[in-house]
Length: 285
Image 1 (spheres, helix red, strand yellow):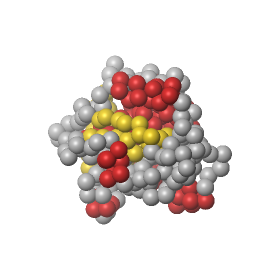
Image 2 (cartoon, rainbow, N blue to C red):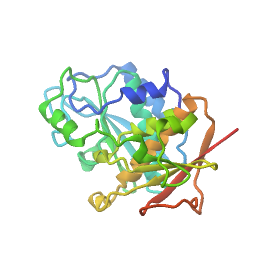
Image 3 (cartoon, one colour):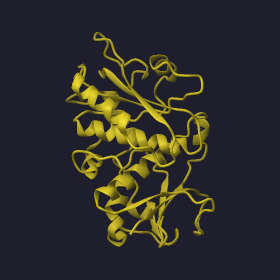
Image 4 (cartoon, one colour):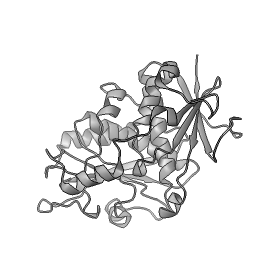
């Protein structure tokens, strides 16, 4: 499990998506810390190889960060995540990339998950992308501006990230007929709240979680038609990986031991709608 210099629950609560930055390069010391951290992380749950490059992405005279269609302003650096397609690679990517995002948060830097509003060709050239590699997402990294730009403010309002689903719509006990509230979640309450606060594409929050005696089971509630928008990258499985990292890192921070397991046959849980079983977190005594 990845460790930080402060509780990961504090980092999760503090992290926000920023698209407006001061036009300053971050220090070589900070760049070195990010690169060292990303190179030394534990392997993600399914063992995929995820690599990272911190790209200097803006000339001093430019306000808009190249390769971001004008969405990002002022950022001099972009964190680029790179993978080769493999089973469960999208969850692994979300898990690993969010780990670095929260590390940057701990350094006092702003970030913003970008899964669709960037040029994969531009960043592919910047990192010498191999033919069999994919860039699922990038993030600006830098010192946030004192005030959001008008476009940034509009995108925050449009995403509705401050209006996340209530706890009882996301988490359940036994099966999907019994909603779970924070008081009834027991030792898992804080870790599940960190899942609720996880960022997701268009703030869809596609994860659904059921607690049983065997463990904590994560299901994917897909948005109809969403996968067709991004045929090469499964953004909602990336979202699942982010949620998984929030849960596991928060559980570790709280002293709750356990690990990930994906059963070939999903748990027998009654479901009111078509959901995809993705993985389970199994507690250890």
